[in-house]
Length: 112
View 1: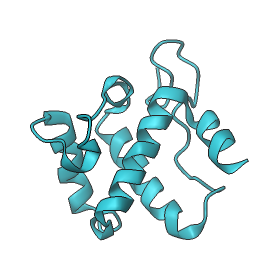
View 2: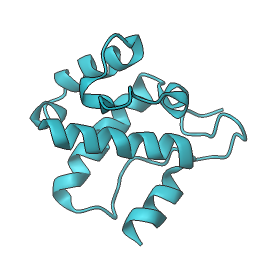
View 3: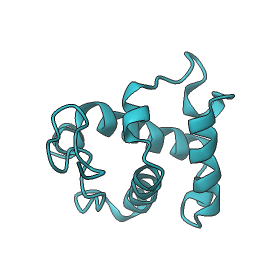
């Protein structure tokens, strides 16, 4: 199974190629960066099953080792380091949507 396959069906490219060519330049760089990091850390399956604490979202949820690893790697990345709290939250919600619904569904729902 390749890293971007659906873990349940082995559908190729379920999590997408991560290029986000259909997104504006400003948002694209954040999405590409986050997608690469989630893929590199092999956290798609975790993200598929994870829901941040109610009222805290991705920004304020603490004590989750996978989220801590993800945040550490994002902080090392020059693009991701430029996030505001809201851009990080939106980017992570987009990654969560992709993990749970697929890259094609993300593109169709938000950019068609």
